[in-house]
Image (cartoon, rainbow, N blue to C red; front, side, top):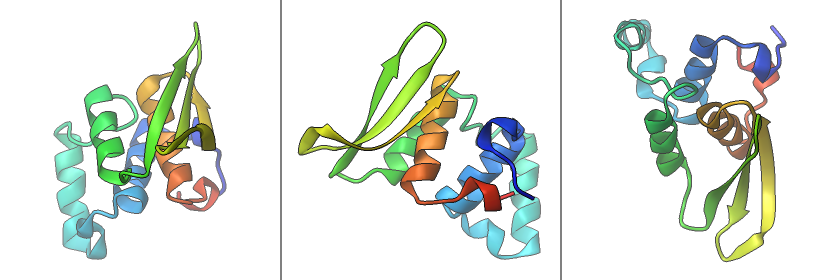
Length: 119
């Protein structure tokens, strides 16, 4: 199923983050997937809508050589992944309408995941 990030539901986006970006071990077997779904239903891992979870995501995936640079305007956010030792050099950037969502999208790009094949 080929779909763009902005057409995915929040649940689908959060699944991509947990399964493909963070590589939760629970996705290795059916029982683990059920465990994930149960805890997700309880409100865990809301990366694309909860800023606290999105910041946790960024801390988990970025190393000392890279950081996020956030640019905000009235109706849009940009998230640049920059080389820490060369702040003017942006490796990639993502755009979105909410800060948690744009952090998630930048994380997907940073990990080299093609969102068109993730769902």
